[in-house]
Image (tube, rainbow, N blue to C red):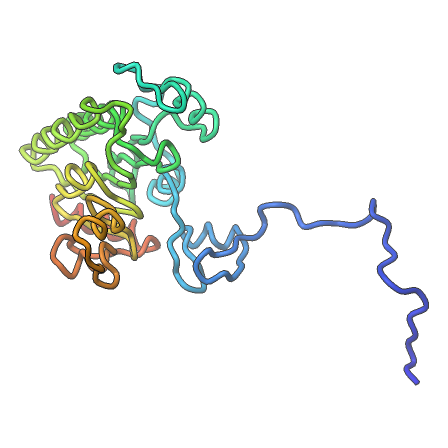
Length: 280
């Protein structure tokens, strides 16, 4: 006979005395499904400690990873989109902009800033996919153009972190014009012999891939990032054939000569400093 006998069945703790784990303490990797502490995930540059899956993050995360002590000055922070075409789909474009701003806390799909990266002042533009799929509208193009102007004025290297679904359909031709506009600005940066590194993250597609994302002195990418112009489904339906395994992944694009190398996010800051030193 056991020396311990449970007299009462079930848990007897009153509901008001039960303690639950606070929200946000744990992060479950969407790739391997394993859990880790959110703090540990953040310290690991938002990559999984088990499988190295790179979580899709935006400007806030990249600024904290790259800028020394997360100290930076944001450029053109208040700029927002107009409605040149009076565009309406399921809702009016200005209403969509306001709703997205309220939901994300962002003003548009890119943020630009400058600050120290391992002690060297760097100007960077980082896209946010959460804002209408990171779509490239007139504000995105203008902020990148002004960031390039700032880099030229301050004689700093320029970093572009792309994550986008392509051009913003609500601005039509105004959106497509940003491809030429940003490309022309980057040509001026090149004329000034200032370094430009383009980092492609998951996903980088459409007009962004066809313009500034592929114009770097070094074009680099994060592991397994989707990189292409049209998406795999569109291409498959267009050509009527199955696509190669890993088609449009960063590894596939690297193998076919469109990237210089793939960099783990945990090593990104150190690699950028090395590249900027090489390009001086």
